[in-house]
Image (tube, rainbow, N blue to C red; front, side):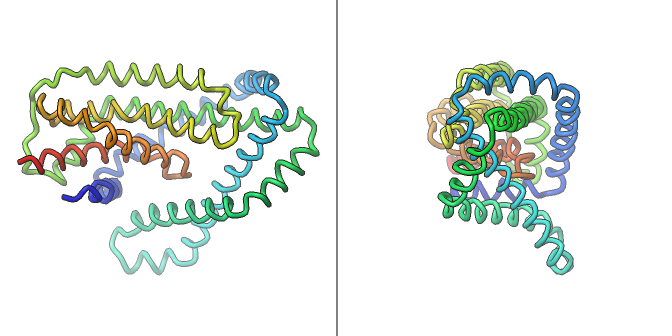
Length: 307
């Protein structure tokens, strides 16, 4: 199997109903739980974020506010475009293919996410002038700060949502991967050898350190563009070890684990690529599971290539 097949196999597995239902049964209820938590804690959390915003220079608040507004506009544009195209062509498309709506949904969302991102970046000077240099400049600090505090509330709750998905997957990783293995690799034997790595400890450790690093890097979240790369790094750092060790603990021998863990570039590449999905509306529900699937298929590919 070629390395390019890792992505395609992971994507194909993700849209299989036997796998997809596990993702949806986890992702959607967890989202509803955090929406409820956000609803009952919103005012208290807003007091804290407003206080934090008050410590930040207005120039940074304005610049970061402009980027957050553009991110919100981008998300709405992606969803509206998807809904519009689906309303026009969905009925025709779905009649011609069997179960193609899964591929259609993922592919169309990714297409519009990239297209609108390119459109915004290509016209960055226009958006910056309209939002940062005009709209936010006309507004008093208190108004801009309150708006930024609202967006910061969403960021905190969303980060906790992603973290909760990561922890749930850490608990049910074995059942999830065995479902995929029976579909993709029914004839491959899995090892029951102890690789000497404590997956549960790693998952909890990384979740705790993710929270600590997020707090330490919090000032960077107010620097435009730096905040995007900072968050991308934090998510990738969260995914990298737990997915790899959790998969190896299920299917690897000790020698294989020792060999594969030296592939740092591949492990980080999978984690970074999967973390990008956390920025995409709707697809963010699937990001932790996609990261796990890519790690699983990469390790299975290595096992098969060495036979």
